[in-house]
Image (tube, rainbow, N blue to C red; front, side, top):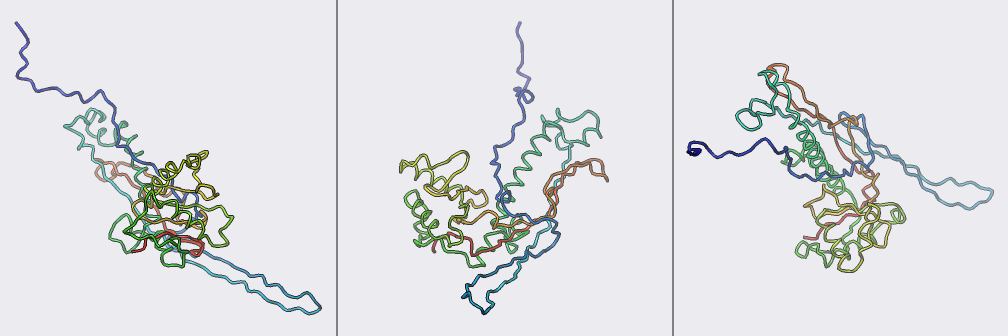
Length: 310
């Protein structure tokens, strides 16, 4: 006698291994170092004052001179919502049903703990990725939903009188390469206007440019300039280098001081995700995040920008 298992389908174990999310890069937002203007529900003005100093001859007469000028810029925030409805019934008849609570209504009223932990973590990372991109690349004229809720820093920089950092006129055809990245960054460093020299500034670049920079340093035996105590400096200078998630794929670079970038919002808690049972049907879990966000540049003339020549 022997076992006869020919009538059984092949068994695949679905219960022994933990739920794993796809690996996601968790970016450090440029906004964390920017100037924050909160309490904005629509639009608000940023106010600036500039005064001059003019030397006069010191004698018995008095001749007043100099000008103090006031100006402002408007920061407009977009009203943004993230909403997802989760029906726990969709988890039935799959291995995921073993995670549901017992009871028809009880099983519908909460995201299983094993799923919720990963779901909320990944949701927040995806939110930060989207914000990082929108802060730089946002354009209310865009046809992309994640970009058209507010204007980003690039739009404001391009509309102003930023300093040209591509003094070598590197073309799109040539591109940024391991062979020319150090020369390009040196040119941006030298293009800094007078009021930025000696100031703590950051050079923001796409991750792909940063990788070229690291390889160029390696090839030039400049290993010790790659990083120091978690910070990367432009070799031989005090300029910070930031591999910026929000610039990936843009072929753009910007050099300025961090506080020159402004982020407008309603409150610091904006963007937090909440979940609740659908009060009407009691059959779904509603996940929401509601926030206001916008950007502005205080002084565009204090930005050195790099754009490839067509």
